[in-house]
Image 1 (cartoon, one colour):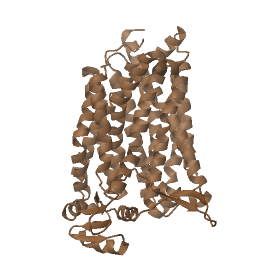
Image 2 (spheres, one colour; image 1 turned 90 degrees about the vertical axis):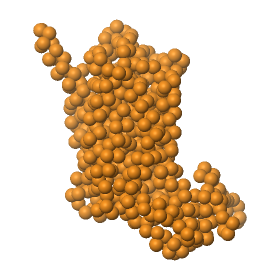
Image 3 (cartoon, one colour; image 1 turned 120 degrees about the vertical axis):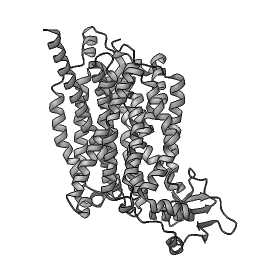
Image 4 (cartoon, helix red, strand yellow; image 1 turned 45 degrees about the vertical axis):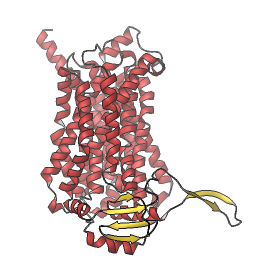
Length: 544
């Protein structure tokens, strides 16, 4: 075979590897993110009625449950991938993911089967998380081990692009479905359609992945008898490699995880839930930023082949630390100027002795008819009632120490209301001009898309090079296992729980920007740890 013919065959083979791995991963991310995008509906459908704020936080907690088991999926499937092979392992993961997602589409709600509804939903979310924990490491390792030297950043950046494309696809399918029916029909049954679509996507991905061959690096190592007999032990019980896992987690993947979820998912929640912009405009604005920003994932993957991975990722973390607060303030001004004006003109302050007690829990005894203590329940204080009222109305507020005139005082500009009475609060808030929802006619769309695109650039900087970096950091015989765990702890725990943690901070404090301090703190940690401890990997030999 001539050199040109061999080159053409190689290029064709590489294209199939990247396309098949990326397409399957797109569909897998789609499966995962349709739940996150529809989280607001699940609070009403799968949890006890009566408290919308609690239902919404429960739906975000369940979103996080899927992420919580991703590291365990990484251990299970990573071990299988290092023992048996890359190809068959991520064939299994995509089947599990697709079936779990489709079953959500036929799951009865709380109104039909009561508490079994959230129980079954938790089981399916756990299955999704386990599958996704094994998927990414397999796809990234498989592509990197096929990539020519000097192009691993470029090749694996297509895998990185899949998360954004999956998110985009989920938004597109949900948008079309909601647009095709009334809001009532979508809330009643239409939300199931995006989950059921995953059956078709699953069939396409399996068909394409069956055409793949095993990674040449792994196949050669297996033929030579150099595969690991105990990948978990070699990855984590031996300090030399365990130290690399910890460096990768705290110096790279934790920061990358929070920057990714803050820049895409938390931005979606912030605009739709906090700023109360309607779903149609929210989806279109997010989608526009994704379209503009997604190619930069490929660009930064390519750039990392030339100048290195480490400093591109750390720069993304540092920029996030320095600019998240002004960017989200800018989103408020651009997407809901009436809210920004009301917050500036007539700030709302809740003066209470409990303003520092976010992590305190007050319990009271539950007694039976004979006076015997049979349990404990959380005490709902008057401050809790006031906070729930303000959160339910979408009123941003600040917690402050109690005043001398009463244990609890609501301050709306110059007006003060002691204690908590809903009618009195409504009367004080009415003149302040806090909007019930954002006025779509006043949205500065150019500014919103520009700010969201900046967030996407940070995502591209931390996410574009990360797959190549992790592949190059670990030896071939334990690569699947070693890289999967820090990646999925960083993304699954630090990043996946970001919406819940940030939203909980906002609900407690009333400050719509307070939740940003979580991703800022984690990104700052990764910047410092990465700067001091992370090695550069772009010139490492991955065949060892």
